[in-house]
Length: 199
Image (cartoon, rainbow, N blue to C red):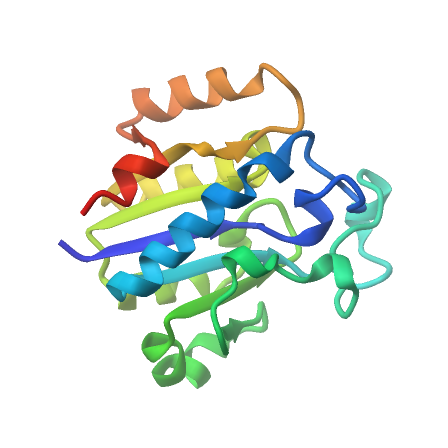
């Protein structure tokens, strides 16, 4: 079974209280995120990481305060979820075709996005098809927004999708149960850091 770890938006602006759009309590899962990353690196499991990459005048900032602006410290991924020399997959059309060989050989691929939904990057679909994963293990923030888009988009690919429940956080307390129940009802599976790193 080919497993791919799917790391959602583990960026400084989201994970720490000083971040521009901090997810409450997200700093408490950083150790777990690091365990997942270290396990993947040790086992040769490829990591697909999504990352907000907003321009300064992004229309999204009419709804959310400015965050993850390209080139800022807050836009960077935390060290715990970053491997050496990751490959970047931008949102520009045909980027996957141009970078395919480099991306498929990389231990970590960072998929840039300008929207909640990582699948708005037109290159993500072709990337996932080429990875030929049988199982995705998903974690990150925020559960009711970007994580939700990721897990349901991955379920639509028809492969096994597992959500690591002790390596996610929601913006609004109480939202997670609804998302998890819906995810399981649609064929998703729940796991933990301990279980995901057991083999």
